[in-house]
Image (cartoon, rainbow, N blue to C red; front, side, top):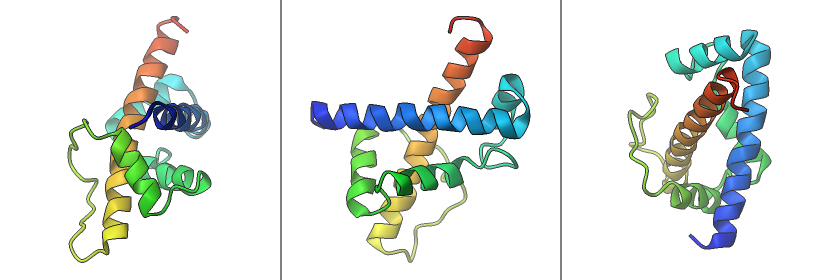
Length: 125
């Protein structure tokens, strides 16, 4: 990934993290509650991580094959854990890439938000 693409991805990730924390705090009633909800069930009520990621990718015009490849290229060294219950059998290549990109970005976003909230709660922000 070229440096300018990395900078664009970092901007995307930071913007998404800020928006997600705002929503998480609003829906759960605070940072500690939001962190607990994110850790216990990222797809659960009030968190809806994958749904949020799909909306962000759509807002940034990355909900297509090229956008999915952009996200996947930025996340190329990450190991995917679980696939959030999604199956890619029978999907078009574009739809499968999209599911992989959502999953990869969700994992990166959850880690960034978790770390950011931890820092905020410990008073280091």
